[in-house]
Length: 143
Image (cartoon, rainbow, N blue to C red; front, side):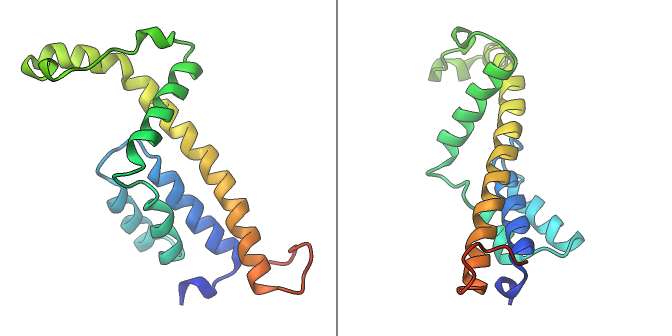
């Protein structure tokens, strides 16, 4: 079973899944997960669980936070964020002009936020599985 792997392997697999969940390449998450499963020896359950933190309930807050972070990283004023409305979709050139303003902050911010979340997830999951495998260990230092 996948979750009988070492705490490090489970944590790394979950962290990769979390990074994929924050990927700005919307609609490619499960494809990326399955490609990584085929190419690398990762914990299937852990990577899929990590990737599925991006779901219909979390996608808007995740991508919004990533876009705001991108604006901050690129030192662009938040006032530049355009307001979208349904009428924008009646003219695709107008829509794409607005979308271009947020494209780079979105790509960069979501990627950086994904890296941060993956590192945090790695250490938390590794600690949890170390304690699960060695309940008598007080500091959970063994791998």
